[in-house]
Length: 120
Image 1 (cartoon, rainbow, N blue to C red):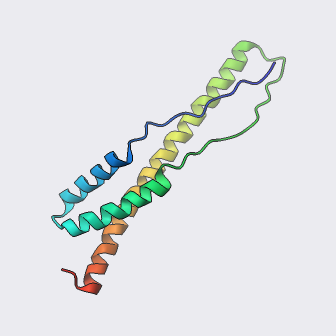
Image 2: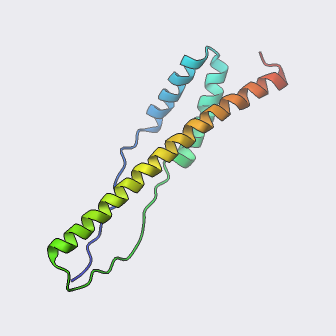
Image 3: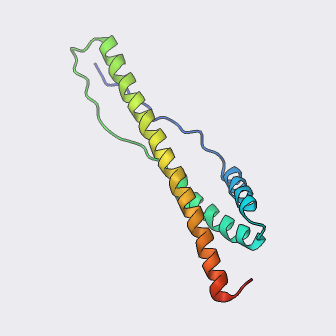
């Protein structure tokens, strides 16, 4: 009996343009400063493009003993797929948290630049 390939779960990934629009809309609700919106929006777009769309593909060899029945094999594969789905969801949640932390940090950086350079 040969092992079946378990496909890694796919994520519903929003387009970069949609995420950029969401970020800029969120920033516009925070402030009327268009310079801040452009500065932070551009930097976040670069950040998301570099890091948020990186894919993780687990790779492992799962040898299934030949004496396992097909229902046991199916149950094992289902359990593995469910675990991978949970991991993918947890990874996406962590990525979202990192993006928001970075967003707030970019706003702080912009505000410090404005103070230092006297841009306002």
